[in-house]
Image 1 (cartoon, rainbow, N blue to C red):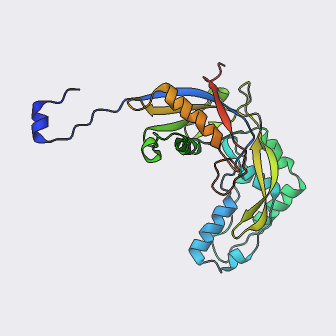
Image 2 (image 1 turned 30 degrees about the horizontal axis):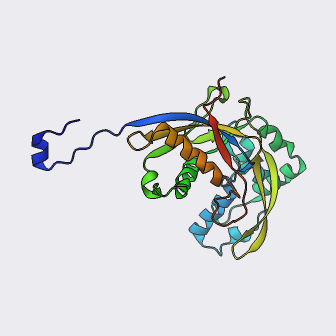
Image 3 (image 1 turned 120 degrees about the vertical axis):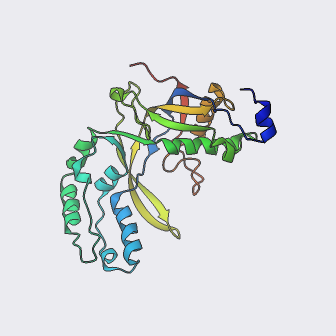
Length: 264
């Protein structure tokens, strides 16, 4: 758009509308991806500490650990999240945690209450996490500055599962487009000052996902946007990925771009 002489003389700043384009691609997992969504109990503990301080009697009641519950809450549920996961813990200092303990006891006695529901669910991963992987991949090219590049594109979730579209998550699929189902993992980790702990988390194997990248077509082209996503696959997504800050041996969550989304 031509800038008029009047505008030039006034010193007015004129910004033309930025041209944004979209590309839809399909990625294939090269290694298992491990997810770890924030669980309700962890968020509750942070809230109680902020409300009453770390020495309050609610946090003094050490709540029981339930591996199958940790597994279920580590998932990003896109649909069919079971009601059993909507449990509540008290926020009153004199509150009773027996409801939670009863839930843990029930799930320990019958894990099918969770596993049967997982078979009905559709799961994914935050699209923002995929964008973070792409921004991190800018380190692989000298002419890509992370601070600038992160404003030139964004990632939307996209899936062909049951013709669903969800712009917050990418959705894990099998090769044939059916929902990819997770399996539980038990991993030894270190927390704090190298304190050992056990984590129970979900993982997906042989996974695929469809992704929409919206990019600034004045700075990127379709190939560059796609190749940046492909490069991000080297760093991976999820837990224990190669690009994780606190590990030098992670190999999970790696992926590659294989083309356009599959036809239904």
